[in-house]
Image (cartoon, rainbow, N blue to C red; front, side, top):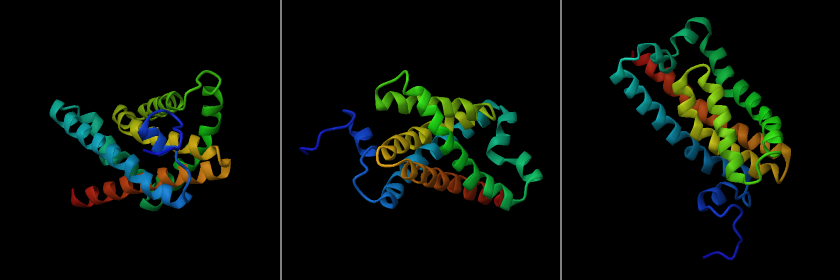
Length: 179
Protein backbone atom coordinates (compact mmCIF):
# COMPACT_ATOMS: atom_id res chain seq x y z
CA UNK A 1 0.00 0.00 0.00
CA UNK A 2 1.36 3.39 -0.98
CA UNK A 3 1.57 6.32 1.41
CA UNK A 4 0.92 8.62 -1.53
CA UNK A 5 -2.50 10.25 -1.18
CA UNK A 6 -5.01 9.52 -3.90
CA UNK A 7 -6.17 12.31 -6.15
CA UNK A 8 -9.65 10.99 -6.96
CA UNK A 9 -10.30 8.04 -4.67
CA UNK A 10 -10.46 5.71 -7.70
CA UNK A 11 -7.43 3.56 -8.58
CA UNK A 12 -7.97 3.77 -12.32
CA UNK A 13 -8.30 7.55 -12.31
CA UNK A 14 -5.41 7.88 -9.90
CA UNK A 15 -3.32 5.89 -12.38
CA UNK A 16 -4.47 8.12 -15.28
CA UNK A 17 -3.81 11.25 -13.23
CA UNK A 18 -0.30 10.15 -12.22
CA UNK A 19 2.07 12.51 -14.05
CA UNK A 20 5.18 11.74 -12.00
CA UNK A 21 7.04 10.15 -14.92
CA UNK A 22 8.14 11.37 -18.33
CA UNK A 23 5.36 12.59 -20.62
CA UNK A 24 6.50 10.28 -23.43
CA UNK A 25 6.25 7.21 -21.21
CA UNK A 26 2.81 8.36 -20.07
CA UNK A 27 1.67 8.55 -23.71
CA UNK A 28 2.98 5.05 -24.42
CA UNK A 29 1.32 3.50 -21.35
CA UNK A 30 -2.03 5.26 -21.84
CA UNK A 31 -2.37 4.97 -25.63
CA UNK A 32 -3.38 1.26 -25.55
CA UNK A 33 -5.81 1.99 -22.71
CA UNK A 34 -7.56 4.47 -25.00
CA UNK A 35 -7.25 2.52 -28.23
CA UNK A 36 -7.96 -1.12 -27.43
CA UNK A 37 -11.38 -0.62 -25.77
CA UNK A 38 -12.30 1.94 -28.45
CA UNK A 39 -11.50 -0.58 -31.21
CA UNK A 40 -13.34 -3.37 -29.41
CA UNK A 41 -16.44 -1.18 -29.07
CA UNK A 42 -16.21 -0.28 -32.77
CA UNK A 43 -15.82 -3.94 -33.81
CA UNK A 44 -18.72 -5.12 -31.65
CA UNK A 45 -20.84 -2.22 -32.94
CA UNK A 46 -19.97 -3.18 -36.51
CA UNK A 47 -21.18 -6.73 -36.02
CA UNK A 48 -24.34 -5.56 -34.24
CA UNK A 49 -25.07 -3.27 -37.21
CA UNK A 50 -24.52 -6.17 -39.62
CA UNK A 51 -26.76 -8.47 -37.56
CA UNK A 52 -29.50 -5.84 -37.41
CA UNK A 53 -29.06 -5.07 -41.12
CA UNK A 54 -28.56 -1.32 -40.63
CA UNK A 55 -26.59 -0.97 -43.86
CA UNK A 56 -26.52 2.84 -43.87
CA UNK A 57 -24.42 2.74 -40.70
CA UNK A 58 -21.73 0.64 -42.34
CA UNK A 59 -20.36 3.59 -44.31
CA UNK A 60 -18.66 4.75 -41.11
CA UNK A 61 -16.60 1.60 -40.88
CA UNK A 62 -15.50 1.55 -44.48
CA UNK A 63 -15.27 5.32 -44.96
CA UNK A 64 -16.24 4.88 -48.63
CA UNK A 65 -17.64 8.41 -48.83
CA UNK A 66 -14.34 9.87 -47.60
CA UNK A 67 -12.07 7.77 -49.81
CA UNK A 68 -13.83 8.89 -52.96
CA UNK A 69 -13.27 12.53 -52.08
CA UNK A 70 -9.89 12.57 -50.38
CA UNK A 71 -6.50 11.09 -51.11
CA UNK A 72 -4.99 8.81 -48.45
CA UNK A 73 -2.46 11.52 -47.61
CA UNK A 74 -5.20 14.10 -46.99
CA UNK A 75 -7.25 11.59 -44.99
CA UNK A 76 -4.16 10.73 -42.95
CA UNK A 77 -3.37 14.38 -42.23
CA UNK A 78 -6.98 15.14 -41.30
CA UNK A 79 -7.47 12.19 -38.98
CA UNK A 80 -4.02 11.80 -37.44
CA UNK A 81 -2.83 15.42 -37.21
CA UNK A 82 -5.55 18.02 -37.74
CA UNK A 83 -8.48 16.49 -35.85
CA UNK A 84 -6.50 15.60 -32.71
CA UNK A 85 -4.92 19.07 -32.67
CA UNK A 86 -8.24 20.91 -33.04
CA UNK A 87 -10.10 18.70 -30.58
CA UNK A 88 -7.33 18.99 -28.00
CA UNK A 89 -7.36 22.78 -28.32
CA UNK A 90 -11.15 22.75 -27.94
CA UNK A 91 -10.77 20.94 -24.62
CA UNK A 92 -9.58 24.23 -23.13
CA UNK A 93 -12.94 26.02 -23.42
CA UNK A 94 -14.92 22.81 -22.78
CA UNK A 95 -13.16 22.29 -19.44
CA UNK A 96 -13.34 26.02 -18.74
CA UNK A 97 -17.13 25.84 -18.89
CA UNK A 98 -17.48 22.46 -17.16
CA UNK A 99 -15.31 23.52 -14.21
CA UNK A 100 -17.93 26.15 -13.42
CA UNK A 101 -20.44 23.37 -12.72
CA UNK A 102 -18.48 20.31 -11.62
CA UNK A 103 -15.80 19.96 -8.96
CA UNK A 104 -14.80 16.29 -9.23
CA UNK A 105 -12.19 15.17 -11.74
CA UNK A 106 -14.06 11.97 -12.67
CA UNK A 107 -17.23 14.03 -13.17
CA UNK A 108 -15.36 16.45 -15.44
CA UNK A 109 -13.85 13.55 -17.37
CA UNK A 110 -17.14 11.74 -17.97
CA UNK A 111 -19.07 14.86 -18.93
CA UNK A 112 -16.29 15.91 -21.30
CA UNK A 113 -16.25 12.43 -22.86
CA UNK A 114 -20.03 12.52 -23.22
CA UNK A 115 -19.86 15.89 -24.99
CA UNK A 116 -17.20 14.62 -27.41
CA UNK A 117 -19.12 11.38 -28.01
CA UNK A 118 -22.28 13.34 -28.80
CA UNK A 119 -20.38 15.60 -31.20
CA UNK A 120 -18.90 12.58 -32.98
CA UNK A 121 -22.38 11.01 -33.06
CA UNK A 122 -23.51 13.85 -35.29
CA UNK A 123 -21.40 12.26 -38.04
CA UNK A 124 -22.43 8.71 -37.12
CA UNK A 125 -24.01 7.35 -33.93
CA UNK A 126 -21.68 4.36 -33.84
CA UNK A 127 -18.68 6.66 -34.04
CA UNK A 128 -19.90 8.52 -30.96
CA UNK A 129 -20.39 5.27 -29.11
CA UNK A 130 -16.94 3.99 -30.01
CA UNK A 131 -15.05 7.19 -29.10
CA UNK A 132 -16.63 7.72 -25.69
CA UNK A 133 -14.03 5.59 -23.91
CA UNK A 134 -11.13 7.16 -25.80
CA UNK A 135 -12.31 10.59 -24.70
CA UNK A 136 -12.48 9.42 -21.09
CA UNK A 137 -8.75 8.76 -21.43
CA UNK A 138 -7.98 11.95 -23.44
CA UNK A 139 -9.92 14.09 -20.97
CA UNK A 140 -8.15 12.48 -18.01
CA UNK A 141 -4.76 13.05 -19.63
CA UNK A 142 -5.60 16.65 -20.43
CA UNK A 143 -6.76 17.43 -16.90
CA UNK A 144 -3.83 15.62 -15.30
CA UNK A 145 -1.13 17.25 -17.39
CA UNK A 146 -2.74 20.70 -17.27
CA UNK A 147 -1.77 20.74 -13.60
CA UNK A 148 1.87 20.72 -14.76
CA UNK A 149 1.56 22.93 -17.83
CA UNK A 150 -0.88 23.80 -20.61
CA UNK A 151 1.77 22.93 -23.20
CA UNK A 152 2.31 19.44 -21.77
CA UNK A 153 -1.45 18.94 -21.47
CA UNK A 154 -1.83 19.74 -25.18
CA UNK A 155 1.05 17.59 -26.44
CA UNK A 156 0.35 14.56 -24.27
CA UNK A 157 -3.35 14.54 -25.13
CA UNK A 158 -2.64 15.24 -28.81
CA UNK A 159 -0.12 12.38 -28.96
CA UNK A 160 -2.49 9.82 -27.39
CA UNK A 161 -5.31 10.94 -29.69
CA UNK A 162 -3.07 10.95 -32.77
CA UNK A 163 -1.79 7.43 -32.01
CA UNK A 164 -5.36 6.22 -31.51
CA UNK A 165 -6.42 7.74 -34.83
CA UNK A 166 -3.31 6.38 -36.53
CA UNK A 167 -4.25 2.89 -35.35
CA UNK A 168 -7.79 3.31 -36.71
CA UNK A 169 -6.47 4.81 -39.96
CA UNK A 170 -4.07 1.92 -40.55
CA UNK A 171 -6.79 -0.60 -39.74
CA UNK A 172 -9.15 1.15 -42.13
CA UNK A 173 -6.56 1.15 -44.91
CA UNK A 174 -5.78 -2.54 -44.34
CA UNK A 175 -9.46 -3.49 -44.35
CA UNK A 176 -10.05 -1.46 -47.52
CA UNK A 177 -7.16 -3.29 -49.22
CA UNK A 178 -8.66 -6.66 -48.36
CA UNK A 179 -12.14 -5.86 -49.65
